[in-house]
Length: 365
Image (cartoon, rainbow, N blue to C red; front, side, top):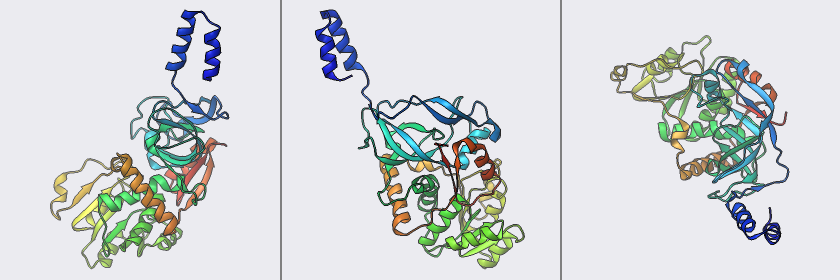
């Protein structure tokens, strides 16, 4: 309600009503909202953990409202990541039910709350990382979004953000890779694997990648892998020893998990580092720490959000990532854009290792 209308109400009321009405209007949270925001939306929730069958597509979920320091975003494209399957399956516990999956999306700011909004206004094109992305609209803290560069094509932001930042922080923070380092990337043709391969090439590393099919081998080579091992018929450990003259690699980036963990430790060079950052094949069982002592190895279980705690960290790495994409022309490979209503199929394809590159959801369908 405008202040002009408030004044009219005041003039038409008795003194007690005037004070009460004005007090009510002034205490109401102020929210700037575009007129086109509906009251309900499409979205996907889970009410229990399990397989893809627990994903419930809804068309009547309430549109959330932004509070202090928050912005409401109409999502255009939503990123799918393995972490979504971990929460869906129960490997990672959901805080409560019903729960909305999804950690990243690209869209337009349609409403803002009060407080610190980091300069965001209605109409801004943004990408963001937080929670609750599997929906037409998401409310997030303003500090979790960044503006999409004006020269970036649609879809690229959603396809690049989480996996690209994962790969970038792995080679900058988890194990700072130097020119000439011998490193190995498991599942080098997967979503994060392709990012790692391209970024490692940009810093001059000697990259050994693994993949399961000739098509994936060729895809990873085109992305910059120096050497590829097709683990469906080649022995990874023997091939790594051959390529490194028996020394092993200084770093292994392992997003596969249980199936590759022991191998990853075995192929490390003395004083090498294993970055176990995913559970695509299942969670790694408990580890006896004494296994690291023979070669003075380092074992790290990094999480992306732990590297992006502050606004400064988030802005620094997203700026560097977008520079790689726009200036170095990194290939942001999109496997497929699925309708939100077909999210179960997308999860099945991702977990079935049928994909290369990024999977996106279109919340309008």
